[in-house]
Image (cartoon, rainbow, N blue to C red; front, side):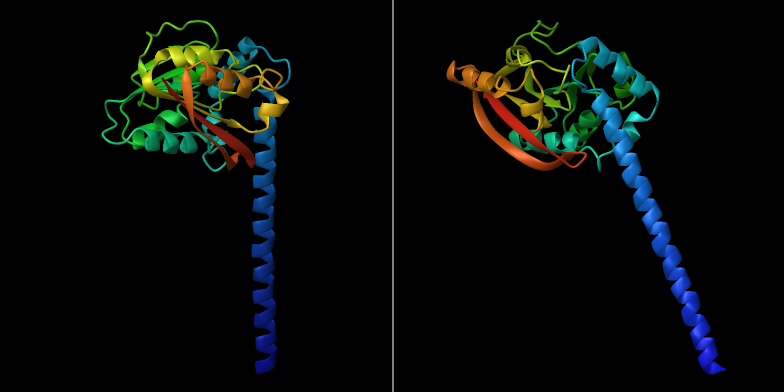
Length: 250
């Protein structure tokens, strides 16, 4: 009888283990499915041939769905945290007087990360009205500007910022190569331009392939800025590698 009780107890434990394993497997399958869905959704914002106006409209709809912050959570999209870490290395304490422009601010992920690092004078720029409204709710921005970052002059004075930062703003139909001139214009002499983007876009986005890095080099040769670093980082976004460009204005 004692042996039968032990046997029954073992069967019960085995059944519990199998249930836990099945539950864990189901959870992982669901999470993987969600990652695929979100990645597919994000790719639609970067599809070939998409216009800047379509991009802005797409992001507004995404913001109004109230799903963007969950879809682009830090465990999936590490760009803002990576960028904030780099900016913090460039600008030591006290940081509360340093002026920063968050380009392609989205719903304010980078602004939040910068705020936790001690930055207090943070402006945000984004062409999507929906994203601007979402970013406003974060209560970390001094000013929010609804406009495109492009080759056109913004309503921002020359030599305004200690650093301008782009994370997630590079891609098909997003920020064009020639926007580098405007980034340099609005940064103070000695200030920094920090660009964090998917490494694959350097080859797969027509506007960047054989254009973006050559232009960066050309601007360095012409004395507009100096390269501080170029670094590839793993798992920048949805398991994809990112690349961080840091330049200092002369």
